[in-house]
Amino acid sequence: AEGTTNEHEADAFVSRAQELATAYAVDLELARSRQAARRLRAADEAFEQRTLAVGERGRRGNRHLVTLYLVVAQANDVMVNVAHNSTFVIGFGYAADLDVVERLCASLATQMAGAAGRRLRAGEHRAQRVAAVSWRLSFYEGWLHAVQERLEQARERALQQPVEGGTSGALVLRAKAERVKEFHDRASEARGSWRGHRSDRQVHGRAWRAGESDGR
Image 1 (cartoon, helix red, strand yellow):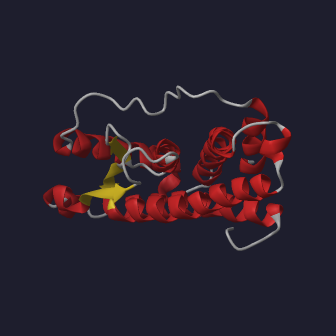
Image 2 (tube, helix red, strand yellow):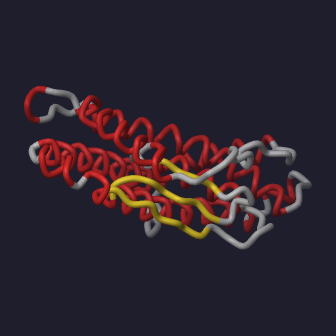
């Protein structure tokens, strides 16, 4: 998706990546259920919590990178704690899911920055008389909104596929999500809530719509 210049190919690649990630998660969960005794005995060992650096304190764009991680994590059964200053995140879940989140998030971050950069080089911000940084951040807002919807749709498509035993993928992953939440509740030391998703900056409508269009 990062390497192609064809927007239709990029769209297909990203959506397919999420569908495969969800299908893989269902397969892993079915495998765990076949080893119930071992799972119960080693439940805590199966989970991980990983810290991922986002950026230096005060750097513009940190909030959007955190939001991107949250969006991808939500689609892949990973719970997240966020530093109050948006400099790092902590993911809680199974190792395979954390791997998916980190890789997909890194790829999407590259695509988001690349899409904004192309429009800025074309001078869209100057035509709207908006500072480049402000235009980029508004673009990111729209881009993230669209990508969140696309990942959710890709996950739902994957969950509609039949799985062994006649059960649904959604039911299989619901049980896993409950265990991840129990692990998070035990392991998390977070206090308070992250307020970074509440933007106190002006959102420029044309830049937001450009981001939303490119995100789709």
